[in-house]
Each structure stands twice: as C-alpha cells, then as structure tokens.
Image 1 (cartoon, rainbow, N blue to C red):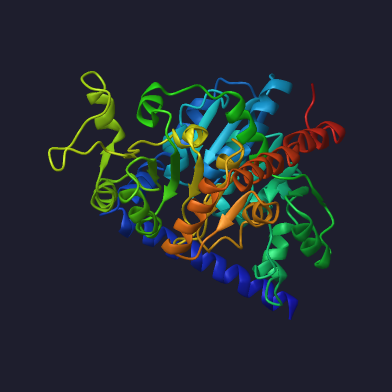
Image 2 (cartoon, rainbow, N blue to C red; image 1 turned 180 degrees about the vertical axis):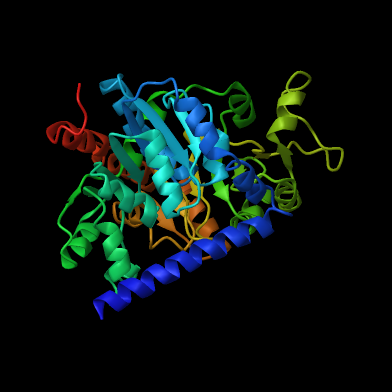
Length: 434
C-alpha cells in the first residue's frame, strides 16, 4: 500500500509538471508574466555554464520561489555573504516577479531562473553549480532537485517553513510528499504548530527558528530614508497607507477616502498594470498617480482638479519597491489581500513601524496576522462598514491607538533572531568552512 501511494504520488507529480509546462506555454501567448517565464529559461544551462566557468568553485545555492520569499531569505543571504565571503552565492527564482526585480541584487554572485523540475534538469544543475550547501526558502518542494541533493550528500536546508494539517504531507495518501521531506538535512520552521505536525509523521530533523521576515522588516525600518514627495503629499495630516490592495480592498476603502478630504490616503495596488491603476482612479474620486505627482512637484505643492477644484487626497503608487517604506508615513496601515486572493499580504512590513494594522477577514493561514491580532496590534474587518468603524475608533481614541501601535511594534521586535538561529546551525554543523 505504501509503495502504491508513493508510485501514484510520483505519477501525479510528473503529470502536474507536464500540465504546468504546457499551460505556461499556452499562457505565454497572451500573458506577459508567462512570456517572461518562458524567455528566462531559454538556453539556461548554457548561460549557467558560461557564467560559472571562471568563478569560485565554493558555492552556496539559495532558491526562492518569488519576490516575497526573496525578502524572507534576504537576511540569511546577506549574513552568509558577510560570514563566508569566500563562497559565491548562486540565487535562483521560479517566478518572474522575483527574478525580474532582483536580477541585479548585489549580494548574489549569480542569479538565474530555475529550470522546470525534472531528473535531467536536476542532474545538470548540480553538475554545473556543484554547491556545497543548498537552501530553499519557505517552500517549493521540487522532488528531483531535492532528491538529487540527497543522492549527492549535499546538505539541504529548508528555512522559515510553515506547515498546515491539511497539506498532503500529513494525509494518508501523502507518502510521496513525506519522501520529499526526507530529502532535507534540516527544516527550520516558524512555529510550534509546524514542528508538532512534522513530529507526528516522525520527521525529527526540524527545529523552531522563527521567521526571517521579522529580521528583514527590522533591517528595512532601521535603514529608512525619507521620501520628499511623500512628505509633501502628507503635509502633516492623518495618513492611511493601504498596501498590496486588490479590487475588493479598494472597494472597501473608497467610500472612506472619498468622504474624508482632510485625510491623506496612499494606495499601493498589488498589481500596477494599467487596467488595475484605472480601476483605482475610478474608485478614488480625488486621486493622482505617484508618477504624475512627481512631475507636478516642480510647479505646485499639490495639483488640483478642474472639476470641483478639489485637492486630491489620494496618492496611487504606480511603481514597485516603495511600499515597505511608505508604511512609516501612516497613522493607520491597511494591508490588502484579506478580501480576495489567497489572503492577507505581509503585515509585518507595516507593524514594524509601530502602526495599528487593519486587514480583511481572510488571514487564518498566516500565523503572524493571527498573532498580531492576539497581541492587540491588528484588527480584522469583514466589510466596508466595519472597516470605517475601526478607522474611526482608532482615530478618535488616543489610548486605544497608542496601545495598538505599541503592541504591533513589540510583537515584531519579540520575534527577531531567526537568521541568527540558522547561521548558528550552519556554523555548529560545519556545513561551510571559514
């Protein structure tokens, strides 16, 4: 029965790989992200061979699925670079949203797309890279890449992982997935729940390290530099920063923004495609795009509209990369994703600045959002009416506001140290040599 489950699991995994590859090729005909996914993998092995031919043979391979996982792994990457400068960092991404935004990241020596998982591809990657240590960030359980590391006795770590009881690893049919887990030399999990789940399936090469995202947001906050245009827009007024918003978030926010002209709103959509920006402009009646605002800064302090001659109170951010700094300007932070998509986005980027955090009802899969509510630093709302009531309560009650802000900050600071825990393991086990 166990052998059958493993065989069936592997069969469906191979089928998934084939269907995914076919689907992405079809999607590339009309989807730009899919097109980049295909384009970035053309002649990838020749590119890797060429770039690594004359470089240091001491290499650490770190893989991140996308931009979010990169931000999560970044403190570890930079700590490895600082403590083991004689090693080259090989960084790979699965998604264009990671690669395209970080392809010039200075602390990685080489940055590539990860080819689609297969036995031949895995063998080629290891033959070319010849890593002395492999680290996967949070997830991405690619069977052939992981099993190849085990076959070659290369230390393989999973960092900042989280597990849920509904995942295949913990189901009766999950033998194939449990086989994948066994490829890891050690798994660093974020919380007790994840560790307990692993222990129940007798996977004991695991420990609680915490989440490296806490280290990352603290680093960002410590290196904050003012943005003059944002200073000019805020004008010392009450500011609500809404980050990573989807349409459903903006539909919950727009009435409050449109009916409170004295409050400044900064909206950073999750998607900054033209159609999405136009959706925001339609919802927020007194809005200006950041790029337009910058251009008009040379003429007037704030642009005005011909219709009603009203000063815009809403700034729509039409670039990527600013959000982690924008939250510092907020009186209250709203984090999107909780009304649609897979759930709320990164609440830590906001909480680190000692700001109350508000988000929609879909957040249960994200332990940091759950814990932030439990600590009193965040509030979940079910609709636009409750959202407005929560905003008003925080703004009208200085004591409640102060307590929520302090709770948010204290929660983030109390969780620091995951990067140090992973580095201590690497040093104690002598996975790398100084």
